[in-house]
Amino acid sequence: MRYLDEFRDPALARTLVAEITGRAGRPWTVMEVCGGQTHSIIRNGIDQLLAGAVEFIHGPGCPVCVTPLEMIDRALEIAGRPGVTFCSFGDMLRVPGSERDLFAVRARGGDVRVVYSPLDAVRIAEENPRRQVVFFGVGFETTAPANAMAVLTAARRGLANFSMLVSHVLVPPAMTAILDSPGCRVQAFLAAGHVCTVMGTGQYEPLVARYRVPIVVTGFEPLDLLEGVRQAVRQLESGQSTLDNAYPRAVSAAGNPAAQAVLADVFEVCDRQWRGIGEIPASGWRLSPAYRGFDAQERFEVGGLRVAESADCHSGAVLQGLIKPNECPAFGTRCTPRSPLGATMVSSEGACAAYHQFRRLAAPAGSKGSSGG
Amino acid sequence: MCLGIPGRITEIWDDRGTRMAYVDFGGAVKDVCLAYLPDIAVGDYTIVHAGFALTRLDEASARATLAMFAELGLLDGELGTAAGTPAARGEPA
Image 1: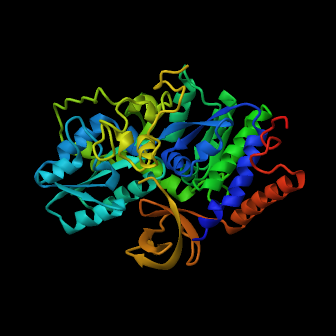
Image 2: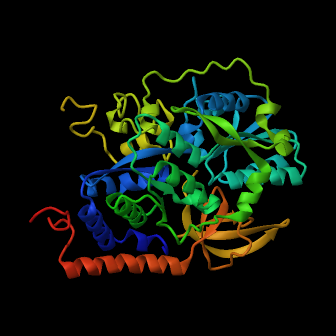
Image 3: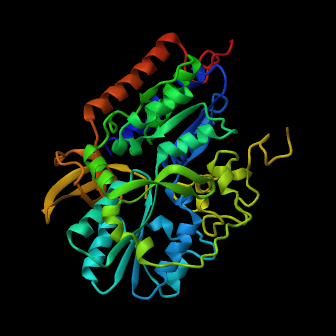
């Protein structure tokens, strides 16, 4: 497959690994922001190939993982109501709420449907005018253009029975929160390439200037990730901090102006709770006043939610890079992808799920989970 | 939901004013909305998120990146710093 096989070439990967390990005069700590990048790093053993030269701290870029528990409970409550058809991306169905998940709601007779595109939910609303069709609009700047277009399409078609439960999150404010936290160990960022296909790269200039941290826009294939690391290490070794683009075949400085225009119309920036992290100012999107009529949160009154996170789940520490997934006492025993305690074990982008899927079951020697040093 | 993969546009049509396309992801074909890429054409490669094409992959840029990787390899060969050797790791031999 074009644009995939070439960027998985083992010989070129060895070249890049040699280049990075040869250049790193000391171990550097790099955060890959996006959960898709985390999965690619663990699946391809890139962290092991670069051991001693680069330590990866896995970032919070997993939308399923950071969607606030209160919003999951709200979704579960709405989805269980008669007359409601609740549509969602598939990876939200197993995310544990305080007491159950969307699969459990469906098992008890709720009309919960998995859709590939939010436009599918709009079509379901058109075909079922007597049902209230609610789409769970979560994700980062990559899914937001799709969700915004669904709202816009519903508005154009006058669909009074469509609404969206919006819990969008934004990447740059999360990076700022990480840099501001007292325990921050991040020395350079691999920025999420696909977020930049939408938003462009200009959002990161102020972060580079203010925190003097190298930021490299990075893709998802093994060679893309190695090239992102190579550029980050080159900067770190020479004491520079600039914004670089290691994913130029997909990312332009301007991003996608058509998508940005629709996002600015349909959404407005708001404060947002992040599951496991807490509230981050101006880190989310909600529907703008012009489209507030499509807001499921306003259409469905939900009272008396009792939100309770599992006491055994350390996903907050994982999401902040304070521990590795296999350092959690519940990892792989009480918490597995089949029976997850927290959202990071659920998603195809969650760090705990990546470690479990690719059999990184034991905490490394000398880590917080072991008795040594 | 957030994972984007490259695919090739094989057919474009109009659905009530919205540009739609079939995109071939190495054998699996999905219908995809092109509302955000008004200039993209059949044969182009794109990255799709949640049923929407978000960017056109730039062939010249991809070639340039791969050529640069290959040159790094040649340079390693010239300098005798193959992967895993002490020299490549910056350690004394």
